[in-house]
Image (tube, rainbow, N blue to C red; front, side, top):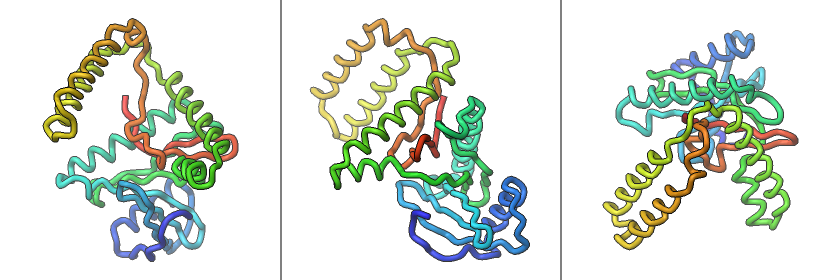
Length: 239
């Protein structure tokens, strides 16, 4: 189990009951008195792994509550991710070679928690570290190839036949550029250059000829896992 061990989950904690119901009802683990070891995982979000002591069953929990002062917003985000994962799995992205993790439940009142299945594998960030720290470029190339295959398969299966509106993407670029200018991260010259490039892309017919697909909403290296003959993802998606 990757992560830093921080102890056992208290039996009176509401999360204990939440996890106990998941392993009993969804994972068919029959433990009269389950006990959960807790591991703090690295990353930008508040994510923990829980391992039931007797069966070895593992679950990943992502907490949205710490990111939002409004618990209803946190619950909405957890539900959105839950439904996004369920939707992608209906496109037969289950098992080898491409797997979308199974969402197991969410709860507004437990800090906006989302529970998903544990899937063992090498994080893409680890493959990058092997290349940068140990010069294992060939390994990184294999992982990049597998990731490209995964994303291409996901895009092909989720294409809905509706043409893209590239104008909306250009509008979003303007929104981001405006934020960067207000934060004084870029100046007027940089903003003008981005606008010039935006217009050049907008004039390309190919930019208007694709179909709408599902995209990853948080495509950071830690959100992709790889093993022998498969690639998995474990995070947010958007239409």
